[in-house]
Image (cartoon, rainbow, N blue to C red; front, side):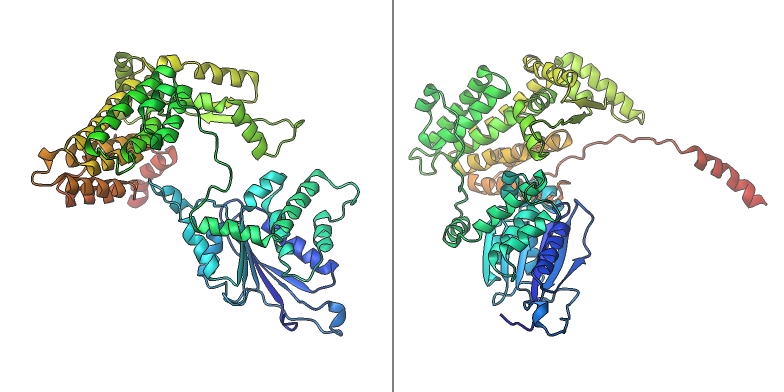
Length: 552
């Protein structure tokens, strides 16, 4: 180590994760050990929103050995001149590497494998997440040494914040010339070591686990190798629900796991009869796939994909399902765990709802639902906003929980409701398109149509838009009469291109362009009501006074 240059450390955290507290701990540990240090907060984004970065320099020689001289520190990091980068989020780590902060010859990179999705990733209708494997490749390629583990999970397990885990990892790396006792003393602060507070105890637990994790290089290297090779099942897989023996005998083993999950989801969502309808639909798909691929060369991929997306569509979200999920004991336990509430702590949970006409009409028979929807449509045509009832329900109270459970008990009304009937009609249209593709002898066309189930997601306007996009694609790109002269493989390629385009942007510009390229018409424009807004009285009065002012 160069004993004439400071040790440079860049701390990267997200807002609210305690990056500032971590920096204070480091400076306190440096002072306690007799070393000169300086920290700088790099301007970032406000708390609990974006990235926050802190730069720390520590002189490797104790002040007592400098003979009265004082080191000169820098206020900001220089690209390629960092000894260590410690980060709580994987994408933020690679962002700093992309800024040139890490050097393959010099920098130790300590990063969490956890991800906090960016706004850009969340906006993509499809899977907009950055590829974790590629991010890890960047870390490995642009670091002298790297240590990657899930700091967030470790912090939750210890009941602390991620800054304590980051401190333990930094202490265990040996980059800084402090002893473990100096780091732990910084966490304790001025508390009595014999009677530490609960928060301090949790921070020390997180520190200790991270410190020990940094001293397990072989196991760590194996975990990183598994992640880079695509083996992400480090934890034991969750137990797969039991599949009925009758279904197990009918369906091939390649689809049993996905089929069991879908069947259990629909039993939980509605009842056993609804789950049997799910199996009946999939039997049609399986038979069609066997006709199109008698040898099973594709591993029954159509049936497997349909088992996935059909279960999700059949278990569509409505107010009954939302009330059921929000009133479950598992949800209450998760909220208490995330809030770090103790066994004797009082925790109040308020759920905000704003059900409108579509939510209420969904549980009514079709004639009544049509009358209610028409009434609200007339209101909107007159310039009014859609009718809705804002609700604030305290699910921690007896009355609040009782109201949720009463609403959840209305699942029996779901099958007689208008939305249930509408969803089944749309599902049958999609199912028919898959079967027609297989009937044409094109396994690839049926497979691409099955994958279009990805377009159905979310709730409200997002869900409606996804269904419109799917129906437009299968109505204009799948039938042979709409694409004269095009082979089934060409139509399969067109469906795949349209599906991927639909997942690129919410507005559907990419989808419309893909449809035109493949000879299909663009989606029709959905009419939107004009809403009239009343002008504030102050503006009306000001407008009345303007002609008089001009005349003067």
